[in-house]
Length: 408
Ligand SMILES: [Zn+2]
Image (cartoon, rainbow, N blue to C red; front, side):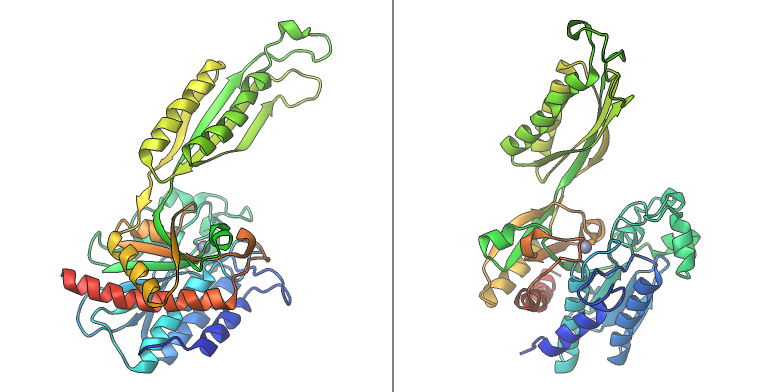
């Protein structure tokens, strides 16, 4: 019986928290490519070297450790990311990285191997601090856009400069790219939920059935600027008045269709208290797992915009990505074995596992986040839930190894 070494698991977690910690109980400030991030990565890699494992890092800063299997098969990848948002928490990303370390430790300490090798993966720059997010997994899966290098990072400096500061050569980051098929047998990620569904349902594990598609639309209403004091109400063309119904419409539509909808970017021009608004620009964002429902929502939002004289242009269309059944079934079997009740839910946020879908079967599971808080120093997952996560990961790789071996 292979078991997670609990004491070591929590000690490793506490150790990782120290990198970037802003005083006792404070935020964890471990932004991608910063000294704290690079030191944390180095510390993690050293834990595998201690066990005598091969480790390496690639051109974009992803780091890896390799635990041999009985057979020469593609590895099962396990891991997450150890970078944080500026002044973030100790659990987002870190928990998945440390749990994957604990899983490999468990095999190593028991002197056991699966048929498949295990590959620990610590993705670089997952948080959207480098102009966008999931930089490391985008480079690995060949979808990184090199123009991002010239974009401003979270602190206004170009992304390229951050990478150079971390000792990387930005022009070589696409060397990290893996073959379309053949890099991994499967990939599994554990993450905190970042929402409160598990806590509300009082359940320990959520199995992710997919990653929501994201669509963003630029919606614009034009009116006519005029004097706010002298123009009678009847002769105004107020762009904001035309735009206003859209706000409630998007909310009601999302509730009705079981998706989420947000207008988080909204500008009024010229934006003076004594001028009637001549133009309103907003970005309407919707997210959901079912592309057909998103299509319906899109048509309805376009219709609503046009009925008030608005213009409607799609700006982002990211399709939903389903989690692979072989991974989902393995997580589910693992939870049954551990007597942990689960619920199934889509991931409303992007994760590295979503990009990994481009090169291998992938899946994810969540453990509860207290009050649904993440990207904050108040992020918290109980020790019991953290340990459940590591145990589910361990049992899942055992299941996955069986299922993948039976398939090949
Ligand atoms: Zn994360």
